[in-house]
Amino acid sequence: MKKNYTIKDIAELAGVSKGTVDRVIHKRGKVSSKALEQVNKVLDQIEYKPNPIAKSLKNNKVYNIAILLPDADNDPYWLPCYDAIKQVENEFSHFGIKIKKGIFNPQSTESFTKSAEIILAEKPDAILMVPLFYKEAKDFAKNCVDANIKMATFNNYIKDQKIDLQIGQDLFQSGRVAAKLFNMLLGTKASLAILHIDEAFQNASHMQEKELGFKTYYLQKELDYDISVYNLKKEAKIPFKKTIDHFLKSITPVDGLFVTTSKAYLLANCMTESFSKPLIIGYDLVAENIDHLAHDKIAFLIHQDPKKQVYLSLTKLIEYFLFGKPLQESLSLPIDIINSENYPQYLK
Image (cartoon, rainbow, N blue to C red; front, side, top):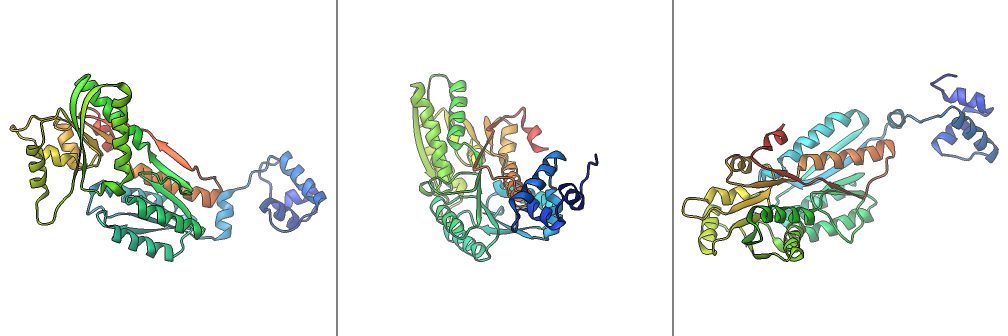
């Protein structure tokens, strides 16, 4: 038997019109139960599989996807996200996919809200965002759902709100991983400090989850660890290095510093012979972190891979529109531990 069947071939085998076959395959219009049975019987016999790409091209539909993300000029952590967008555009531009970026200042809730309002007003088919400001992001997600716009997030999760797709690491578990590393290096008794640097902690669920996971590890293990928590915020007209220097000089010496953001390098920059040089564990392969990691001034980095998160998020949205693949409500990515020996593999 032939491998490639046309609608005409199927119609002849089923003894119906081409129009009837078209309506059955594409599930549109009315078809008698007898004709439906005849066509489906033939489709089963020939093991018919529709060509989703051809269908998409025939429909000539353009899908608009907006992505709301921070300005990488304010924080280099987000720079790989832009590379991921370019990669997706190159791969899917011929399939009627258009991606528009909405950029906001990661230090400003007002900037986020303004960019979100502009994107929502354009009514795209889907929106991907990083919920950096939890309250504002949750409100925005609800508005998107109410407007029947597919909603996806990456980097961290939004709870108690319908989201079609959420991709990222289990941040609670990543906090536990960091705690385990300190435990392995420092033994059963030590003093540690958790540092949230340059973000509004009360509205940053990603930092809260990491801190909670970190503390929970020691509580469950019943280890004798003294843990302090500090929020360091950049102040106007005061160099951030001065703020870090003052912090390091003012606290009781600790054995380890856990930085919940990509800014562990700010601490490493200030480590001199006058300090006790505690172990530093932080997040993300930004250039300055890598330099300190290579010279063992930072012990470990947890790699969150924002490029992969954006690439997967966009491709899964696109596959939903083009091929009808169902969206996975939550996808948790591996927690990669990076040190001075294996970091080059992650820079390729």
